[in-house]
Every structure is written in C-alpha cells, then in structure tokens.
Image (cartoon, rainbow, N blue to C red):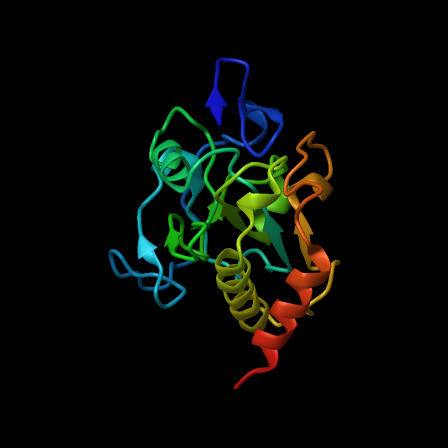
Length: 202
C-alpha cells in the first residue's frame, strides 16, 4: 500500500482519497455504549486505526449491514496495521487476517471504515484485509482461509446475511473502483464452503 496527494494504493488499485476520506461526523441519534479496546469478534487483537480512516456510526441502526468485502493487503499484516494507524493514509478495514490465521480488529463494526472506495459500500459493509499479494497463490494459507471463514460466518450470522456471493464479495466487485483484490488465486468456492460450514456449526 502507498499513499500520495492524488490517491492511495490498497489492494491492487488506486483510489482518490477524496472518495473515501470524508470527515468524521457525530451521529444524530444516541450512540450505543462503547468500551475502550473492545472487539466484535472473540480472539481478535484490538489495534485501533487512526480516527481519520473511519467514521463514527451506530450500525446497523443507522446503516444496514449486508455485505462482507474481501481485500488483500498487497503487503504484510504488520504493514496493514501500520498504514491503518496513519491518519494520512485515508483508509482502514475493520479486520486484518495474518497468514497463520491470527486476527486484528482496527475499526468497530458499529463504525464505517473507509475500505471499499465507495461511500455507500463503506456504510453497508464489513471489510476484511488479508495479508499477502494478489499475484501470489502462496499468500492464501489453510490457516488464513479457515480463520477468515469463521470470522465471515460470524458476521453473516450477526447481520442475518446469506452465505453467498451476493453478500460476500471481493473488493474488485465494488462499483466505481479499479481494485483487483482478492485476485485470481483466491479460491471462492473453497472459501464459501468454509464459511457455510462455520455458519451452520453450533
């Protein structure tokens, strides 16, 4: 990932910062109670993104959540966390998944993370970044698939989303962006099977 005055590189494409870096604004309705350092998914580390890279919200009360967007960092797990903590970067996803399956949460699901390059999709989705590169099949390990699938299954259950390619999409499928992630080596059939299995397991 990289950032310049014109735009930022994240997940294999360049997006103008103005399309995702709109100002944080207080919500009109009362906010639900929040606890510092709390996570929405058990086992995830909390690594807070810079406040410039997301917008405070009260989802799903103010914005219905009906998508999970799958990203690839185009770099390492640590790189993703570092740039999400940089207020000049202009973007952050809700979660980052490491090759060994370890997870970090950087933005609460209540809030709108600037990850999709499309305001409406930011408001309606949870973004999950994955360590690695779109053109390297070795980036996507068994541990990563399994961990990410369990996370996505939990998100689908929480927001009553169907486990299908309408509700679980790649960044490349977000309208108005030129991103290519998760790329040709991401095994969608395998991933959906894993998400479905995790979603139906008590």
